[in-house]
Length: 375
Image (tube, rainbow, N blue to C red; front, top):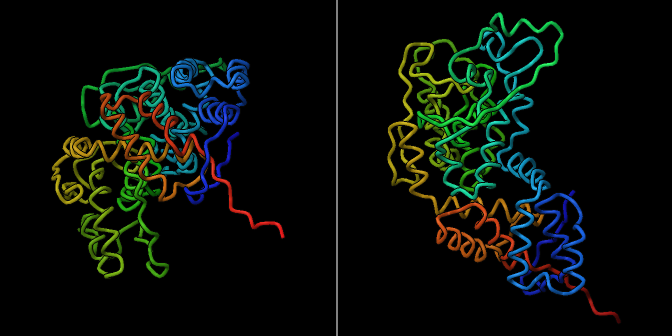
C-alpha cells in the first residue's frame, strides 16, 4: 500500500493539509491508513504544528507497525528481491544448498535486521556501511566461513518443527559488517559460476550513491561465464579490460569498475578468497571518485565513509522517493541538500535523517497539474 504523488513543476506545488499529512505519514512509516490519534489531530488542525508533529513522529517510530517500513523500504532500496532468483551452480557451490533449501532464504535477513536495529536504536547511518555488529544464524555463520557440508545434526530432524534463530553478534573482522559486503548482496550480484564486478559496481553506484549508470549499448555482448580457450590464465580484471576497449563503454566502466572490483575478494556466494581458481591473486585495489585510494575492502569502506555526506544525501533521496512513491525531480535537489546537512549536524543519526525527510518541502507539498481555463 502506498500513496502516489505526481512530480511536476515546483511552481505548482502547494502545502498538503493535515489530513493529507496524516495519510502520507502513515503510508510511509506504517504501510497503512492513519490511526485515530493522527486523524484526531488532523481534524483539530494541529498535526502540522512542529512540536506536535515531532511528538507524533517519535510515537510512530516506536510503534510495532514500523516493522512494515523496516521490511519494505530496505528490501526495495537494497534490491533484495534479486537474491530470491539467484541460483549458484550447485556443482561448484554445493554448500549453498541443503535438500531443497537455499542459503539465500536466510542470507537476506541479515541486512534487514541490521537496517531495523540501526533505525530503532537511532544509530548513525554509517553503521550501514561499516557496522560493529551484525546478525547471524548457525547456517549463515557456516555459509560465511566455508562451503557448508551438512552435518549429522543438520540431517537429524525426525520430522520435528525447526526454527531459524538469529543472534546479534559483534563484528570482529571489518571485512564483515554493513550491507555492502553481506552474503546476500554478494550472491545476488554474481552469476551462477563467477562474480560479476560490473553488476556489483552498478549496484553500489545505484544503491549506495544513488547515481545509477546508463544501460550498456545494445550491441555489447556480456562477458562469458567461463574464460574462453587461451584466456584461462587471465584474472577477471584482465578479461574485462579486453572486453571494455570500446570508447562508448569506457566512461561508465571508469565509474563502476573500481566499485565492483573492490568486492572481488568475495566469491559468488560471499565467501572470502585471496586467489582465483587459476592460482592468480585477487587484485581489488582501486580509487573511489578519483581521490580515495584503497588496497583492501576495509580501506574501501573507509573511503566510502570519507564521503559519508554523499552517502547521506543518496540515502535521503531513496527515502524521499519511497515516501512520495515517485522519482525525484530537479526541484527536489535543494531539499536533499538540506536534509543531508541537518542529519550531519546530528552525527548522521538515522531517525534524524528520516524526520528531516518528512519535514522537507517535497514531503510536505503536493503538485497540482496545470489545467486549461474553461471557455
